[in-house]
Image 1 (cartoon, rainbow, N blue to C red):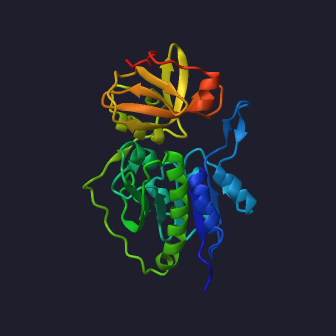
Image 2 (cartoon, helix red, strand yellow; image 1 turned 45 degrees about the vertical axis):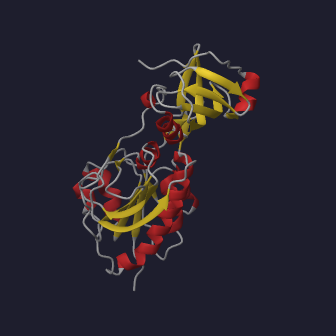
Image 3 (cartoon, rainbow, N blue to C red; image 1 turned 90 degrees about the horizontal axis):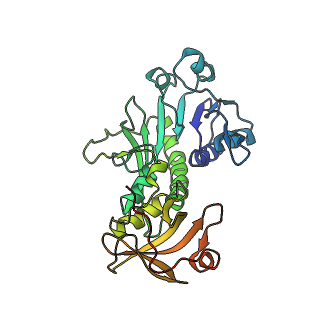
Amino acid sequence: MSRPRIAFAGTPAFAARALEALTGFECDIPLVLTQPDRPAGRGMKLHASEVKQCALAHGLPVAQPASLKSVDEQAALREAAPDLLVVVAYGLLLPQSVLDIPRLGCINIHGSLLPRWRGAAPIQRAVEAGDRRTGITLMQMDAGLDTGPMLAEHAIDIHADDSAASLHDRLASVGAQCLIDTLPGLLAGRVAARPQPDDGACYAAKISKAEAAIDFRRAAAKLDCAIRAFDPFPGALMTVDGDVIKLWRASAIDRPGEPGLISDVGDDGITIGCGTGSLCVTELQKSGGRRLPVAEFLRGHPLMAGQRAQLPD
């Protein structure tokens, strides 16, 4: 029997973990699709995606179309003639004409337990919402936004100290393993897709820099979740006397306070009043500096009780 031909489409590190796993599976990978190189870093030099770097390391052919809308942009995938296309955080819309190219269609590794958190930022939104459980859904793709029938799921707990970064890394490993565990049965026709319910569906909008400014009028518990959700991007921000400071780690405490007012400063944390309770901030970063534990931060950037964090308009 001939080996299955499985093409891959993805861009960031989350997707590269799945591609790395796929290279160890008994299949041929005739094509890897990833987004075009982007300028990055202080020099704004063109930077290859993590998926492209993984593909080249394994000697796999790579195509980087700016979109997949036209016949010409779809040509490389058609010529690859895959039995299946695995899509993971690709970042480009797949029109129906692309979904129809592989003999077995296209499957997607999604970073939530669907239908909760359909959309671009399921990991960050789950942390921001204070969810206690999330996971991976392997689904058959259709023309909707993460609405296709489900092939497999794997649930994990969200820890109280999880950031989007730490949860991302755990889910990337779970997603890669879920793919490898499901492929044999899927290729043999033994996996039955289950329709995805619409009840409980949420939209996970892409995280924007505009969300970074912390509003201390909100409850401390909500802000704790937001700070962890915005790690590593865009980083939660507060402004004190014109200085912009990123907050990377904090915990909600049951202590009344005036929103934005710094009531206590010490090596164990900086206490800032919120709409309900207070935040004890334990890791910070000054503009142009490094992420630092609070004691080290205060040695170079002193803050004092009585100062106020600016409240967003």
